[in-house]
Length: 268
Image (cartoon, rainbow, N blue to C red; front, top):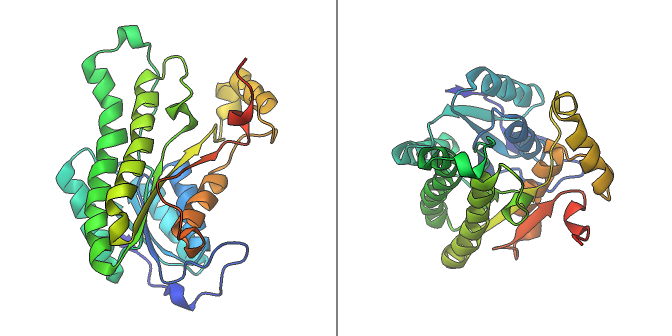
């Protein structure tokens, strides 16, 4: 467990972002490229950030240190989200840190590739379990905390592959479709408790080395996207910050697509 002592309520109001000072946000999978970007945007908006990790302890510590160096407040917590009890413990520790939890971003997940015909049930579950079941357990735990405090927001990181399948991604596509529908169902049931639940569906997000690993795919994406570029973790983080802010107080059960316009292209 690593924490920084800074008080985010004393930071200047954020520039160009909704003001989330006073909020405490838990971001799962924050040691990865996308999770890190989301956590940094919440910190830039003034929120205190709980950065969850499973294996990336050093990356999580570096993230916490970066937020602290910028005057923010952050805490790194480890949990294995394939275990239901670990999900509940993570949420309890996150809420206990500053006495509240106002936002949860369910970002943790995996994305291997495999042909459907060669896939075993174990292969299928190796993707659907972490991508779907952790979302269910963390949301359930967070909703109990938020209900007692009068409300909050939950955002699931889904994907445009929830309704646009890709070869060798059947397990991943199915898991993200489940995540989108879980958000809608949870919004329906948790709405009376003041809890908003949405999903964000990113398109292709750039990472170091991606253009070298998949040059043809990157070229195709850039040609297909009306915006003409890959997405960034900041793009997704900004969407999550917006959905957690008072500006989105009447938005729930919605899937916010962040893909540079790729989904707008005709398919015939």
